[in-house]
Picture (cartoon, rainbow, N blue to C red):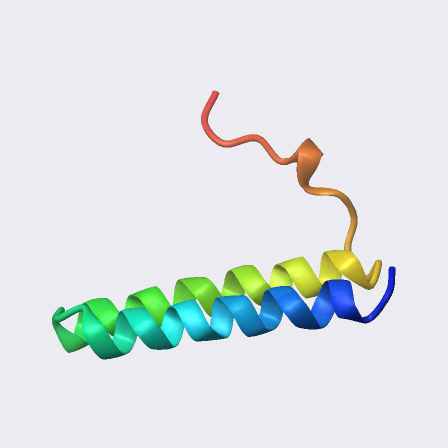
Length: 63
């Protein structure tokens, strides 16, 4: 996978998160939770991209 396919989504997610944090009024606790969820999702995506964790298709939520 070329590096541009990794860097470009990171830039887009970063800009979107900055826009949400800057221009959408919300409580600080909600902002912190949103930031944490986005960071965890990006870290999991990066680990998957670099092959450090397996595919997420085997994960089931619910019954």
